[in-house]
Image 1 (cartoon, rainbow, N blue to C red):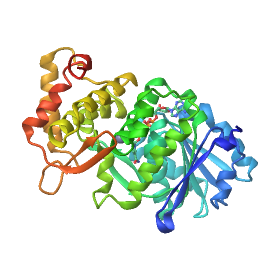
Image 2 (image 1 turned 90 degrees about the horizontal axis):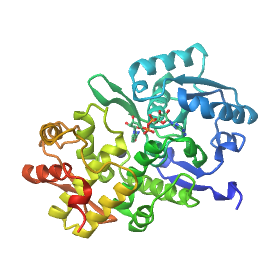
Image 3 (image 1 turned 120 degrees about the vertical axis):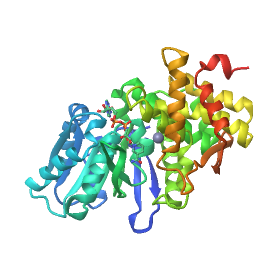
Image 4 (image 1 turned 60 degrees about the horizontal axis):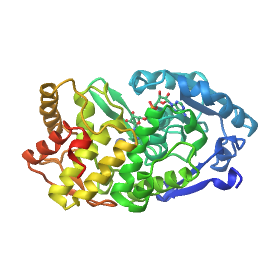
Length: 380
Ligand SMILES: NC(=O)c1ccc[n+]([C@@H]2O[C@H](COP(=O)([O-])OP(=O)(O)OC[C@H]3O[C@@H](n4cnc5c(N)ncnc54)[C@H](O)[C@@H]3O)[C@@H](O)[C@H]2O)c1
Ligand SMILES: [Zn+2]
């Protein structure tokens, strides 16, 4: 099979804001035609980070130039710190200094940090210009590049500033995953496992066998994830109807863990892995998820190289952490107007439901599971 033949397309149907997600191996080798295809005509600003710039900027700039564009490169330091108002201001000034007009477009080349930053820049420069996402991490391919959420962090908290801006196109070249550090790949796999768990048992079963960056069916796996997210986003583009909440399986506890550990100990996907293990137990107790499936989910996370218990020096430190996680759950920005968390739980692997209210002692019991290594607890 030729490289081109191996690519897939997922359409995100959002009326006038509809777009394609192109997924394939070597897509970025195709002379920048992807940019022409969606009608970009003016100058393009490629926003990337220092690590991705070293690896891929030359190639992407070359392809865009070959397709007749005049690309300008803007690089920010790699890492979450670049999702800041300071970085937004720096890049916006850069665009203004180049005198880019509204016919210009922004291309975000990188992981979720760059997608969120570049998208917010595109949403605000001259009150909004065209935007294309070129995700280079697994997490960005299956999650952050699709759905139109853009934004940055404030010192007061994560993702507190932002805008909805759907891209004109998403180009996911799986070849780029070959340079992604294994820990980052595993973190992206947490979201893949989540998609299988909430919507697609066959996808879950495939993923449970283990996935590597070079796997021949990775295109199909990423496509399935993107399609699940697209179908959910289509029903609830601006996150007001509750449908999008399904994507938060494992995220209520995961976000709380990230927050209390000050985003230092765990990558997002790693915190979500912990959140999913706990949420699987909540699902068993409150939504009828069979015990066997709690175990299968835990084993899958573990086999993927994701954490399944809190790695604290001793139990007393871990217990304090659990208290702080419980407090953080109360401050979750997604709690309902009545101040209660609404939980996404699994009825079975492949089928999730939203809207569960859970008593505090049950939540605490699920968090306590995270004190114990998986083998002691979740295996018969
Ligand atoms: N907008 C959304 O809907 C949404 C959804 C989920 C997450 N997010 C956001 O995404 C961000 C996390 O994204 P992420 O996990 O992709 O992190 P990231 O963008 O920081 O990328 C992780 C690391 O991998 C490096 N990298 C990227 N591509 C590479 C490649 N191909 N080869 C080698 N190294 C590479 C980066 O330089 C970085 O150091 C968070 O800020 C999160 O809030 C947004
Ligand atoms: Zn997530």
